[in-house]
Length: 299
Image (cartoon, rainbow, N blue to C red; front, side, top):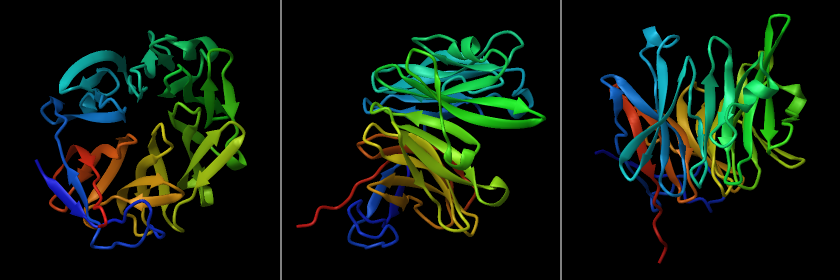
């Protein structure tokens, strides 16, 4: 077990770039295990009950032919839930345990599915690839569909509440990939931005309101998860090209990297500020981890 010590500010600090030494952030790392030697289980979702959704990817040479297996980890126990060939079978986990992701039937494209709605992607978009990327406690599902026209692929974000799915308009008609949905109905997606759409920014939809989280000039933001309370985590790319885990709340984006030489990515979080993800240190060591952020109390 490893401990990373950083000096990022508490979330009430006015500037996200300040690093006061009197407020250290401590992380406890826990290995989430491997499906097979050299094939780590990768976390994709975490709820406030402490359940973690993970998948074990096939070795690279088998990725198009071997089943990718999805699991739920609860109180240290691992339960296999679903599998898919050539895709990620499990992408999201609600607070009350609902699951969603992708599945493939026969030789057709990957389609969005949810445990309580089965393969609805095959019903609405039978010829297009779709993915259910987020699910909430009331059974709403958010995701994206890939449409190909004149050799060009464009992705559109949808919200499915049990009736006909509706598409959400991305800023400037950008290519968008859905990532998460919380219980308030807020949808998290990543949109292409910058010259030639080579950079990324995070977009949040809540009803008709649209919020854009913009990266630093020359950098990029990629959101991976959205908590019930509206916190966003993911990875940011610095203008220097380094990849760091981040957590966004209260209008500010916080760099969670423990050291400048580490590469890291936050893959899921909850409102207790527990973050799961993966890292690579300056020696090349890497692995999945669970991190808990603690802040000191002023006296």
